[in-house]
Structure formats: C-alpha cells, structure tokens
Length: 246
Image (cartoon, rainbow, N blue to C red; front, side, top):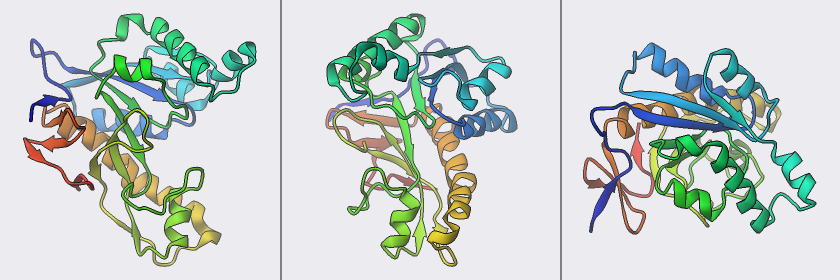
C-alpha cells in the first residue's frame, strides 16, 4: 500500500510549523523550550494562531516575537447568529482563517497546542494528514467520554497509570491514529481531591515531553508516513493502535 510522508524536506529547507491555541499556551511554551534547549535548526515555527484574541498563549507568542494571527470565534458566530457547532458556519469560519493565513497554506504541519475548536472539511482538505493533536490520556481506552477530563476518567476507572497520546488529527472521528504515547505516570496516591496536582504532573512529565519529541525527533526527521487508510508507519514499520512508546 502506498505510503505518503507526513513531512518531506524540499531543497533542504527546515520544516515549517503553524501553532493553533486557545488558552494558556503551555504546550506552545514547551515546544519553544525544546527548540532552544535542543538547538533545533531543521524546523521553525512559522506562525501562531488563536480563536481567542486575548488569551495568554497568543499574548506570550507576540511578546516572543512570533508572527501571530487571531480571529475571535465567539464574535464570529455571534455576528452570524449561529451556534459554534453549526457546520456551515464552521466552514465559513475556517474559510476566514484560511484567508488570513493565505500565505501560509504550504506550512508543513499544523500543531494543535490546546486549540478548542473542531475544524471543518475545508481545513482538513487544505492540511491533509498534516494536523497534529494531543490528548492527556490513552486514546485507546473505550470508556472515554467527551467533556470529562482524562485524568478523572482514569481515576474513576481504577487505572494504575496514565499516559498522554499524540495523534494525527482526522476528520469525522474524535481521535485519529496514534503517533506516540508518553511514558506512563503512576496514579497511586491521587484522588479526585488532589486531581489538580495530577493534571500538573501530566502536563509537565508527559505532554511537554511527548509533543515536542513527536514534532522534532520523528516528523521533522521524515520518519512518519501514512497510507490511504490512515495507518501510520514509523521508518516504514506499521505502528499499532498505541503508536510509538517513549
């Protein structure tokens, strides 16, 4: 079956990255730190976009000198008088984003670093097999329910450990194919009463490692490919449903 690289260098140019975020931008910060700490020179952040113009993440990106764009999704849908999940209006919003980012549609990968909106078909078509997302839990667990924190679900289901998953974002399904999972974190000693401490540990020890590693040590090195059925391959070896394990 024909495999297509998620990223392939042209003229030895560095991989270009577009960051989408909606909140604090801590995963964006982790990516920036990784670039600096590892002296990364074969990938670069081309722009940062937010649907929340005054969120801390986009303000931080501006202060650091990154090219930034924003378009308030709340204002956009309010003016239309439509709910945020209206499919036609979702497409209109994404079309407006693509107009704003017209000079960046050839960006190599899009990284969702805490972006809280679902894309429409037009966006997935423009960036086909180039959108990377992350979930702070194991996406293969069948009990997962939308809207409930992954950490809380893990505790409620008596899990002994938790790990986050970086995956290729796909249209019409909640989770795409897993690229990588972080090292597991033990849940012993955690309860719903101290779940905020657990969430902090997941961010610091799992998310902030797994996402940058996937971007710079796998994708930027041209090691990840995808076939027409959405199966992922690492160095031409088929990945299982859990992806590569750190």
